[in-house]
Length: 598
Image (tube, rainbow, N blue to C red; front, side, top):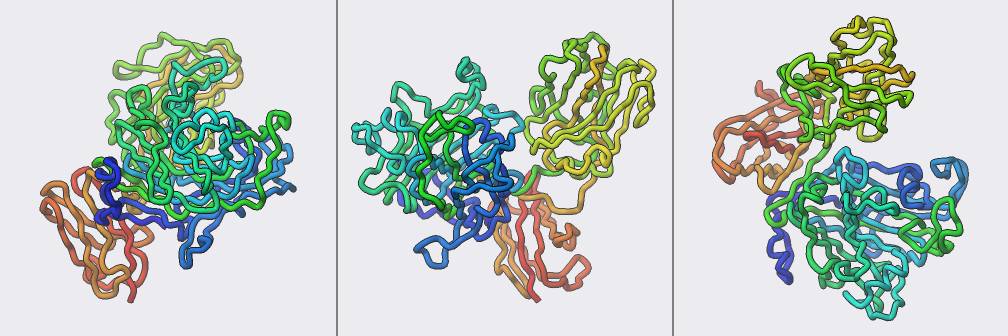
């Protein structure tokens, strides 16, 4: 269950200079439930990319008592040796292993701070690949979105041997997978593109000269069947990853990795992941589809991995956690327009990218409809074409459910095309504009025309409007040659759903504290800190998103206190239930939950 803390001091003794910079606890997941996590099903793209052998099943993930710790629960992920109906890879071939994976995407994203997790790994022998890691929430494909692996075990023998003269290693090339743990971070680099690495993935742990990567080794007391603490120290300039074993902190690299313009992926939000993979390219076991590529899996089954908690602390003055999807856009949201008034908008090369798919279009020469800019293309003879405008980060257009997507287009009347959207889960949906027909108000006379698509038609049955990646896509599949242009693209009619936005907690922004007492009966105290004196507004909502009460005024810099007696703005007593209180000050907002008990 998520908890937000803005005043709880960290209880570390200073044994390392970095710890002196650790501040308040901003968020923690104690795994009393899985309300803030998605449980993954299937083999999916990770099987394709990494050659993993498992099929992820929801039944292998749950909340369970921590062994030997009465009253404490945690996340339990179980890997099993099993096969049967539905346990197949993405091509339908049978698999022999199942496991579990959870992600916090759409529920929790983090940016900067000190992230700490307490993890217990099973005996992985050969073929187990447990990890707690983060993936960038950006809409770019991997590795351009960025990846941070706080801990992963199960590496190849060659990797362990290369580094075993450091960090507890004995230099004898005899460390097992149970005796070594490492961390990694991956980003895109043009310099890393080679025939063997076409994705351009630059990996910190790729260290053939053994001068930077420092896996931790523990021979006498292997790193399995007991808890260890893993930490990521992260701000806009550096990444530092460590493991704490028996109270001693060990760095997993010789020095923090310096973030610069080439690795700017690490200056954006990430979501959290935990999983226990089986086999694949990281391990010495064989890979998916090729039993001859490695050794048989010998990890004992069933294998149980536990995550006790994940916490985010302020570090070096930084640390943010966002709960839920991005804030909702309202009013008019510009996709590509110069002159239409908008409440917010995408800006090419700043917050959005414009893509032509697979070289199917080349530059055209048509003039803009409005302003100085236009998207104009000529078909390239590929038999189809596709192009789209992608926001760099997910955009929440959920409030536009009753609105319209409007755009101007100049395209020959004999071209049939589709307009659609894509969400961050990969769902796509399109509406069709047949040749020589007037559709959604678009008159096909060869001149500029405007279409207005109801969002209710555009979203289909699966599009998640809270998390859009491509807010506008054009697609043609008949191979009709043409030159065309697009302009003045925007979403119109966005309204608030009435529900409070999820909170964003930042070490450098206003602080909204838990109300006291909570639950409460007669009254409760709501405390908040403002970074500077100024106007604030605090509103209270019921679970249906209806505003029931509100306060406002001029607050002082620092601590402020309000009392609420459980009554609405008309003085009527409210019933028992869950309520949300949202604080606004300037451009900052924060939201918390409280419980009224009558």
